[in-house]
Amino acid sequence: MTDAKASPAPRMTKQRAAILDVLDGTDEFRSAQAWHDLLRHDGSSVGLATVYRSLQALAETGEVDAIVTSSGETLYRRCGAVNEHHHHLRCRVCGTADDIEVPEFEEWAARIASERGFARMDHTVEITGVCADCTAKGH
Image 1 (cartoon, rainbow, N blue to C red):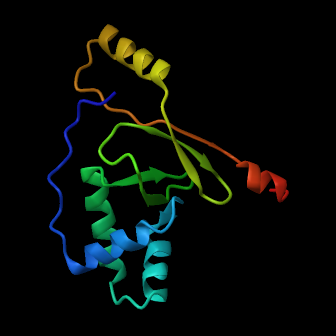
Image 2 (cartoon, rainbow, N blue to C red; image 1 turned 180 degrees about the vertical axis):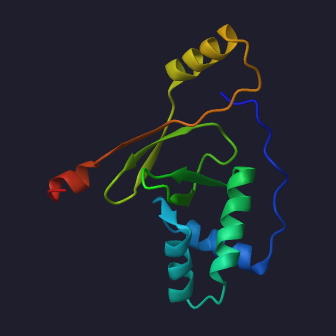
Image 3 (cartoon, rainbow, N blue to C red; image 1 turned 120 degrees about the vertical axis):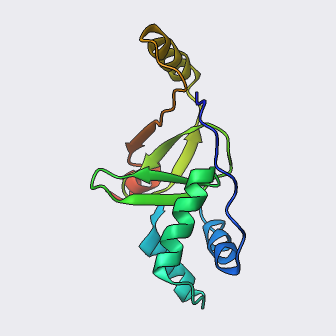
């Protein structure tokens, strides 16, 4: 559950369109550096600083999901549930992720916030593990 409002969509530039195109190619979470490497591999001249700024702006508007790993690195991906509140089940090895709905958690979070007098609540839930494919490969 979230009461936070998304920021207005950032201006669509040629660079931002290229970033969104490469994000549409996979459902894995990757760092800004990894997305930049893919862009360069595809022949794009988008700079790393532009990739960072664009990913941050797109995450603020809900067009891109951002998560922070246990090492503090921010990872991004384009999500099918744009601007919809959702959570993730993510593989720690390969980075693949599934969107999950957890209505019981939503109800619990709303109740806890209300009991303590909190309003305009926002939260993020991410569950990590090792996917079946990576487990089969011995990871």
